[in-house]
Image 1: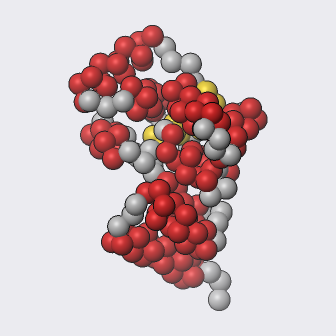
Image 2: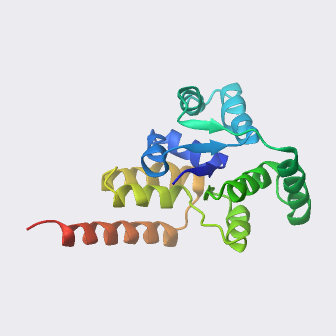
Length: 181
C-alpha cells in the first residue's frame, strides 16, 4: 500500500537511519514539492545530513515527487485558509485523499483533519511499531528511537513513552505466541 508523506516522518526516520522502513511497509512513498523543499532543500541548506538520505531516496525512485494538478492546488489552498493550516500540510492531505493513500504525518492538526475525512493516518511511531510487527526491526530500535526522537525532538510525555513501550511489548508477546514451540 503506497503512502503520501509529510516532512516529519521523513526527517525523523532519516535521523535514526531507518528511512528504508517506508519502502518495507508501504512500497513507494509520494511527496509534494513543498515537502521536498522543506526536507531536502532546506535540510541541505541548514547542513542536516539526514536531508541527503531523503535526496538519495528521491534520486533512486524510492520516494516519488508528485506533480500537483491546478485543481488540487486550488482545493488545497482553500482548505489551508479554512482550517488555518500550512499550505504544505494541505497539499499532503489533498494528495493523499486524491490518491486514496494514507498520509504519513506527525502533525496533530493534519492527523485530525485526515481522520475527519475518513483517511487512515500513520505517524513515525506507528510506522516503527508496524516495522516491529512485521519483523523489519528489533525491539532495540524502538528504544533507540524513543531516546533519539522522543526526548530530543518529539518531546514525548512519559505517558506517551509508556504507551509506545506497552504497544511494543504487546507486539512481541503476540509474536511469541505464534512462534513454533
